[in-house]
Image (cartoon, rainbow, N blue to C red):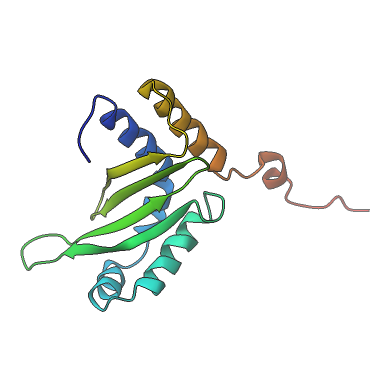
Length: 151
């Protein structure tokens, strides 16, 4: 994506939102992720991404894009890059999620607003609001209720 004064802020907003999904994906054995990419098992990979995302976002908000890539050599740590489509209401974000041994990173390739505003600051705020609205947050009261009263 061509860098703009708002690129870094938008990448941080999306990265913060996607962080739990990246953490969940890093629980998958890296050899399995590389095998799925190497043998072009994109449907299986898409299912893993959807399963990781459904814990944190409404359905179909975070999906695998067109695939991904990996770096694996004898001297370094493996690196997996997944193309993601992040679609909260009114916005589409095309990004690359990089998964490494003890960290993850996100780079935005393109952002498309369904109804863009002339002011980029308003667009950035809208991106943040829609990601918050698309996030699934369990109700704490329901989680805290662990046992039924005895009679």
